[in-house]
Structures are given as structure tokens and as C-alpha cells.
Picture 1 (tube, rainbow, N blue to C red):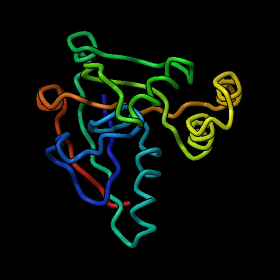
Picture 2 (picture 1 turned 60 degrees about the horizontal axis):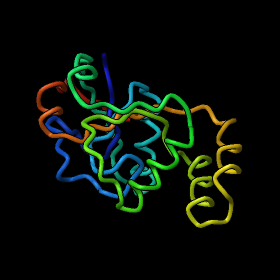
Picture 3 (picture 1 turned 90 degrees about the vertical axis):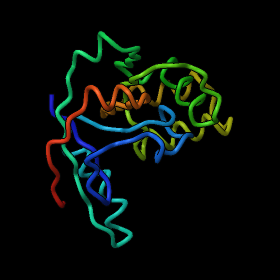
Length: 157
């Protein structure tokens, strides 16, 4: 499977030590099988007059069965709780790979309203029900990255 990472630099050797901790699925290396989504991730750097670079990887999907993997098929109560725990530094799980929807701008607004207790969980889930999830694959274990991802080039966008 081909997956992508959007950044301001080429990332031939991904590592989780340079990642932020309190994001959607916690500290990890974030990728997507959707090239357009990786290009969108580059836009925040381009707005700051930086390069937009999409790095491409070959991913051995055998990792899904050999590693501890959590997959969210939809924006759900479980997804919302997991993101809340990760974004507040309260995640204590040991998943190697987490797959699920991205908290893009529209989704992020709903999540923030929920986090700030301005709407309750049922209202948040009602709003999220109409959003089509993008897809992110977060690698949270460096050994998994080293074993199952192979850099396959990059391009400026």
C-alpha cells in the first residue's frame, strides 16, 4: 500500500521523537493513503511561505495483524473519547498503529466545542454523523515504522 506524509521537508527516515504529543491519536508519525489529504496538510506550511513536500512510503499491511492496531471506521463515541484523551495528554494505551478520521477544520470545531463543555457528547456525535471521515494512519511505535515503512520518494507541491 502507498501512503503519504505532508510536511515542509522530505522525511526519508520518519521518527516519532520529533512529533507532538497532544494531537488526535497522540505522539506518532501521521500518514494517509489519500494523496490529496497529504497535499492539504502541506497547505499550512505553504501559508507560512515554506515548502510543501509530500513524502511517499510503501507500507507493508501485514503490520495490521502483527502489531497492536486500533481502527475507527467512523466518527464515534469511542473515537471522540480517544481523541479527547490523546489531546489532553491522558492516553495510556499502547497501540502501535491507530487508524481513523482526521479532526479537520469542521470536525475540529465540533470536537473543540465538546472539549470546552459547550455541547454534550450526544450533540457532538450528532454533528459528526454527517461528516465523511478523511483517513489518517498514526504509527506510534518506532520499531513498527522501521520494520513496515519504506521511503519511496517525495515531491514538492
